[in-house]
Length: 447
Ligand code: SAH
Ligand code: F3S
Image 1 (cartoon, rainbow, N blue to C red):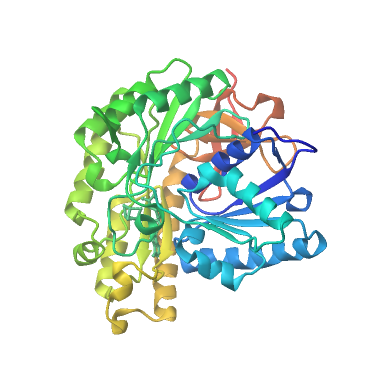
Image 2: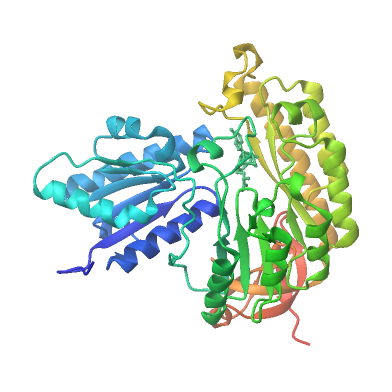
C-alpha cells in the first residue's frame, strides 16, 4: 500500500540473541517496504518497537523498565505508538497490555508479516477513538518468513536465519513455547538471499537457528547447505550458531574441515558437566558423548576455537554436580563460555520441579562466580598463548577510539588495531600483540 503524506518514522530496539537481532532487521525491512523511515532514536519516531527476549527473568525486568521509560516519550508525544514484540511479548501476551496500558501492540515472533497492517489498524482505531491495544500472538507452524527482505546494517558481515523455532524440550528453556516448532527455510531461498548479500558487499555470513545443525529442507541437510554456501563465489567466511551437540555429526565436521570458508570456530552449548543434570535438563547427550564431539572436531580441525553456554544452579544440582561442570571446563578448555544462573521460566518442565530443589540466590550466585573465575582464567591462558600469532582478520567496523578498527579472526576472537575507517570490509593480517584476557590488541602486518 502506498503511503500518503510524510513518511512515518519507526524505531526498533532489540534485546537478546542473534536470532532476535535478525528479527529486528526483518521488522525494519517490512516497515521500510511500507514507506516507513527507520530512525535511530526513539525521540524521532512515531512508532517505537521494543523487540524482547524471554530467556531469563533478568532480561524481562530490564525490558519492562525500558518500556515504562518510553512511556515518558508518549506523554510528550501522545501520538506515539509503542509496541512490544518478540519472545517476552509472546510469553506475557495480554497480561503485558493490562500491566502497561500505554503499550499499543504486543506481537510474538510469528506475527511480523502482519506488523505494518497491525500498525495501520491501530492508527484507524485511534482515528475512530476505539480502544487501540492490539495483540498478535498466534504461533504459526509454517511461518519461516520466506521471501521477505531484512533491512541490514551496511557492512561485510550478515546473519542469515535458516531455521526458526525449536523441536527440543530442554527442561529449563522457554524458546519452544514462544517460538514454536522448528521451521526450516527452503535451501534455494537461503542461497538466493546469500547471493544477494554477496552482491551488496557481504563476504561473511552466519547461519542462524536454535538448533541450526538439525536443519533439513527436502533432501538438503545442514552439512550440505553449509558446504553449498561455503563454495559460493564471493563468500570468504561462513559461521553458524547455535548447533545442538547431538547433531554435531561426522558429516558436519567433515564439511568444517574440508571447506576453507567455514571458520575454525564451533559454539557447543554444553549446559552442564554432570550426566544426572544433563539428563534432567533433557539435553540428550552425556558428558562422554560431548567429549567425543570435542575430540572429533579437534582432530579434524586442529586449530578450532570452541565456545559454550553453561547454566549453574539448575534445580536439584548438587555441589558435587556443579564441581563436575568445573571439571568439564578444565577438561575441554573452552575459548569462551557464556555463563548463566538458572532462571525459572513459567510453563517449562523445570519450573514444576519440587520447590525444595530450587537453590537459594546466594548459593547460585556463588556457583556462578566460581564458574566465571574458572572459565575466564582458562580463556585468558589460551589467549595469552596466542599472543605473537599472525591471523587473518575481517575489518568489520571502526572501534570506539578514533583511528581504531575492530575485527574478528576466523576463530572468532576480537582484535582492535590502528587503521583507517575507510577500510571496513577488507581482509588483512594482524599480529596479536597483547590480550585483555578476552580480546586482543594487534598490529597490522603489511609484508
Ligand atoms: N539453541 C539456542 C539456545 C537459546 S538460549 C541458541 O540458539 O543458542 C541460549 C542459552 O541461554 C542456552 O544455551 C542456555 O545456556 C541459556 N538459557 C536458556 N534458558 C535458560 C534459563 N531458564 N536459565 C538460565 N539460562 C538459560
Ligand atoms: Fe532451548 Fe534446548 Fe531448543 S536450549 S532453544 S529447547 S535446544
